[in-house]
Image (tube, rainbow, N blue to C red; front, side, top):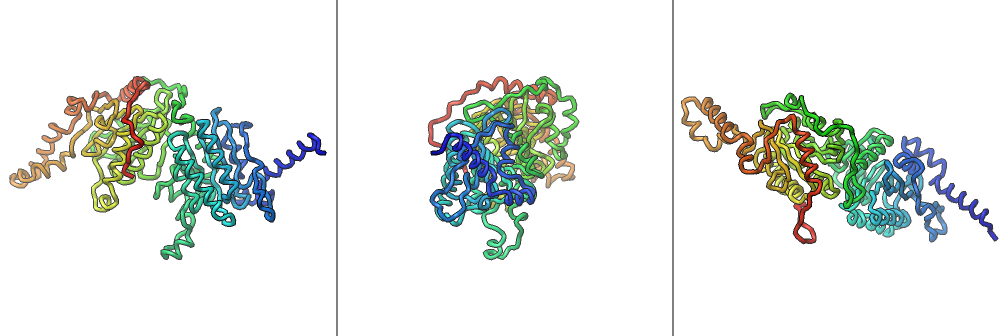
Length: 514
């Protein structure tokens, strides 16, 4: 008969064996690749000594012939991140290459249920060779169970995916359903079909890194939101992101005393933004002066750089920033920038994060490729996102807002709560240089000096229409402000809007133009 002491000794040994994953040799192979083990990653992510593992002894008891690994190829549990609870799973590449079989799928799905019921974020650390082929449909069923829970949790709890190795085939759809994807340079790969399959089917030659590496996904596909040079930095930035986010959709975003007074004037702001609407500047320089201590966590930094999206704080409270970037394509809205901003606005609205919009936009990008690519539908995503958002929305027109892009960028007409403009702002259907070519074409052509006449008409158009005062007279702009007071005005507006309440029509859900 086993005594309690013997049973405890056996349990201790069992858990020690489970903690080694696939064994010391495979752990060393993981380190040789420059990668942490699953448990080392969790220890880096969560506060020291706070991780509570569950299902450490889960195993496939029906497999009589194979080697039994307790815990299988994933570590699951919860811990504290900056003192707040989060659920975490980490795929273990040392066990069957981190492949997903029935036990792994059950463990991840079970943890997602725990996170959803508890109202806490879930972070998935992905490092897997994909579906466990030997288990057939059971593996596919495991992925389906995870996908279903990703959708049920969407907009309820923050979901963060961290790609720390391969993530291929159907496995990629779980990260794609989450809110943010982090990758590590030279280590992470995501693709639906690998280079060999592509070569055999299409004849195209590529490499794993070109096809699905971090650089490709943060700049070309836009699938990933962040990329960092190593796992340590990547996991630290996951912690940073969570510091801006609420635990769930019923919580407020976490306040921090940043020590930056809301009445700080932006004394040098007018030297940053040129008066001429065709001159470039970096809108990040404006954002850094607006937010507390100049700290912005930019999202999708290298994708669609003609718009900037990110998280910062104003008066200690998190805000989402959306800003046209005149440094790239003049800040024009195109397909990629529209869907980038729309996705970010939807996320902020899901988790009670106010949206601050900085407008300097010449319009939507014209062109055959844009029209054929569906700019109408993609631009409509941005319109839909702003119109549907019920969080506090404050918009500032810095320099210009022309055409349909004026409407799309957080205008009063789409439900923005407070709209400001700088006195140099131009709000019109189009710029004068374009407008006179349409409305005064004959007058210019018949003039003795067409160039001089065109210049005169452009100046007349600017004085008559390219200013904020017509919009202010109609109530589309709530105030024309001194640029140096922009931070204070936004802070006061957000303070007033803290108790904002909106009644939306009863419906199952809207039909966003996907």
